[in-house]
Image 1 (tube, chains in turn blue, yellow):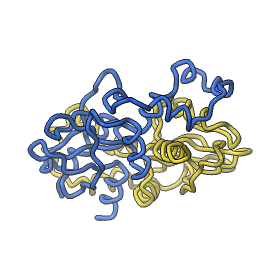
Image 2 (cartoon, chains in turn cyan, brown):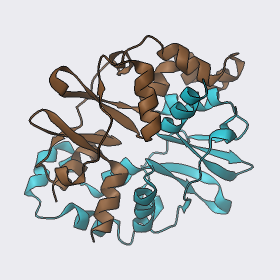
Image 3 (cartoon, chains in turn brown, blue):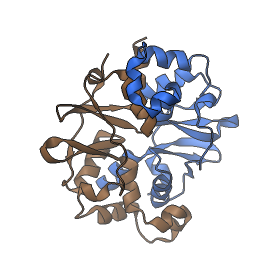
Image 4 (cartoon, one colour):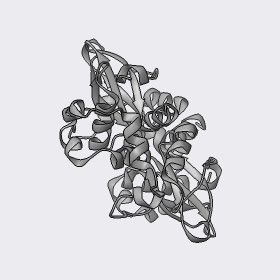
Length: 148
Length: 148
């Protein structure tokens, strides 16, 4: 079994796409994150859903979440207001870590190793710079434990 | 809208439960993680799916995933062999970080703040030490963006 045998379809987002649309896509498909593509559809980053939430919450409230009670604002309004007019690229963490991208002919064990190293909820699988799909940690477990 | 309005059902795992069963459950329900409960069903930790993958991959391969190619082993066999005979408690990271647990009457903004702070893919919602369910980051985005 190779990495390409595990891939699932995923909704692709370009780094220049609208941030609200990207968050909506992630919510609809219930993915823990999205692969972000750049020029020519080449994957350039993974955007975890928790990073989108992180983007809309000010730093001082992240430090002390009980302060959220004093904000006179609905979470839904805050999320829409903060994301409006932003691009996907604006939501990416400032420092790009190792990119969780593997090739279709990598083994499942290599896939597991990269996922383990980056503590990443999903990995993109590419062939010749074309994204084949993603593999989530839960899908990896599901297929491996089903196969035995 | 309060935290309790967002909860989803989830399969509960006791800290003493069989590790293979827990991984299977996570795979079947396609959750990015599970809430781990202790005495009296009280939540004591969150086990991300990527942490299970991390547990079965030796440290030297996490450091250099290309070494996975030299292992003469199928990923599925490795996962089953490493998890066999283990308990859920064995899989938890050595240092427990802040626990992503909130109360049913916390606001959605507080929920978002905790999720942002811990970069956590899911948060457990409790009432009187009883787990009501979990909220994932993608569900939070989905509901907030649908509500506007």
